Length: 449
Image 1 (tube, rainbow, N blue to C red):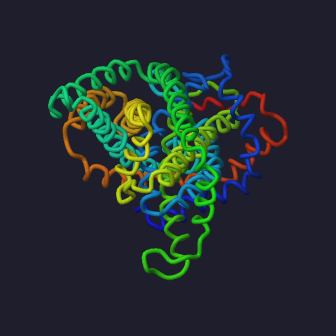
Image 2 (cartoon, rainbow, N blue to C red):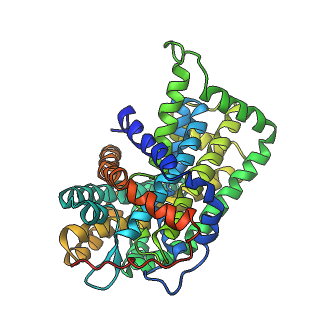
């Protein structure tokens, strides 16, 4: 599913919304300032930063590390630039998703704010059947990409760290029990508990990882200019690749760079607006701006800096194998004495754990839409059990299924974004471009009849 048709659909939506909304990327600094503020007296269950942190927790995962290296392995260094450009345009789509999340959110039986693409589809377009389809794919994807594969990444890395002390299976089982226990403790408290943990974990893990990467770039500083030249040069190279026709280098770089950028930041996938709907905010555009910063931090910052680390390491150590993304990542970071491997291990473990927390909420809201509040308890139990399963099993098939489900999630969400783009543009024009950003909206709460 992540071939050229899906890439064109997603990237085309990014570009369309960028210009339809008069380039909301221009308000990035305003968005960043809003993300650390609070609209305390506004409707919602968590702060704007809490919603953003939960979204980032789910978005920043192993794809930001291994996925970038895989794009470089398959598409060359030029893939880094295409990944970055995808993030820049994706900011507009994440903005639009956040706006619709607030515009069409409602309250559940417990009085909690709920929303997301399923409510935009049902309440904005009258397409309940498509909302159900979206939720089915979201629930399936959550158990895969949001749970088992992340638990597996944690246990695999810890088993390598502890290989001289314990046998791998023992380490994986113990890791699975510990992670499952912590996850269970967090998710039982609902969105407020998840947001509280994420507001503490996400800034800490992201800052340490970025600082570690900056240190590696300092060690490889003599290769930074050369790496930038290589990235830009290969991104637009007309040379042949692997014996192919002229221009295949740019096609390969664009194919894998764009795909990785789209998959990494989840703009257009429909996941982030599910938690954005719970945010305390005065009007839809304020939360839309806050939501848009997620793509900036995930792709424009973290993916880009990871790409620079990998490319400078390739230049500094030509013997590094580039045949496999996972191996390329390990070797690129591992070449830096003492700190390289710990940075990589820390990044994978914390990013994976945070993804489990964030996606648990996405899946829970999808299951609630399909089966009501009674289904949530069973979902939470199953979620915890699958953390254990994912820690000890090989999950190649799950990865493939998850990729398919993520793509299938995106299609209903993109339909909502495109068909409701007029409403998004109208709200944006009134609140953002006419200077009414501090005005309270009258239709923030629209309880479902």
